[in-house]
Image (cartoon, rainbow, N blue to C red; front, top):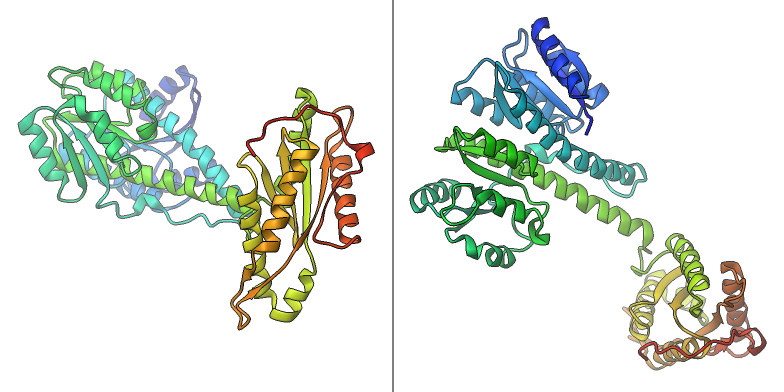
Length: 472
């Protein structure tokens, strides 16, 4: 997996050495000589990873990282600090500044490349979600939201899996100062604990030194569980077990903590992973909201005309290929203009919302219902012949006729009716336009022959199909 990597160091020899190693692994590389240039390069090129030196003149790596993480345009870019400093306090400072990892010089190539591959996987996913979020924002559907990389994540839910009683208790006590923590000291109870907390978990911490379980295998198994597939995982590993660390990163584990655990480093890594998780969830929520708003009618919550056009074409194509029947209803409320003129548009909106509910109640979950304009609705009914469609249309008509609409007006309730046109796909060369036109003409006839009626397309135009059991 290729990636664009920004190397930041004020020593040209260090830059050249890292650049050569990265190019040898087929990464693309850009460089910067100080923190100021690094920020400019990050904003301009949006690299996939930033390898950032700490000791630089003017603005050190810690401050550079903080500024990158404070900027919504660059906060999502993973940062690995590369430095000669090897004190725990320095590593914690880097992580507190927002760095994703901290590696010391001379650089261990295997460890660095494993970390890069792990972070690039996460970045690719994040970029795709960010792009969808941006599309929604550009369309005016949603806003980009806040920068979750600086958000307060205290109170988040953590599942800690460790059967070392003493160590597990110490970690539980420390984490519980800021987070909601569940300690699982029997790995056989992990899945049931996850199910009990489904939808509320923000982070998993798994010891790789479990007595009777392979901790890394358990972590890998978590990656395949639907309930926690996208939940970040931090593994606890022995300080000298580099092989296990590399294997974990290769398997998709997000981060690691060396044992014995430095609690300040633990808090920094935990916060980073949960913030990334929250940011990802915010983007997903925005995307789902944008999709919903783009394809649904704001008033009724039904599908809109834009979505209907695409769906109907796909459904017709499928029916022609499978030779299965397809029917269409177009319905319109009778004398709806009188509602708006007499009671106002607010009451008209109330009536349309209630009408939508009646249509939903009278149709199947496999039928697609769309508002196509004003008081006009369409129902797409797959695997449904003319007689079955007519029966459904009659059920809708009777329900509307017999169910007065409750309105926020002194009158309390008003009675209304609907007219419905029905058409069925001709499986020998029919088109979407033809199908919709026949339903529309049937509706027109229903309107001009008394209203409160259901009219199918003329018998001479109805396709001959075998009756299909639709569940009604």
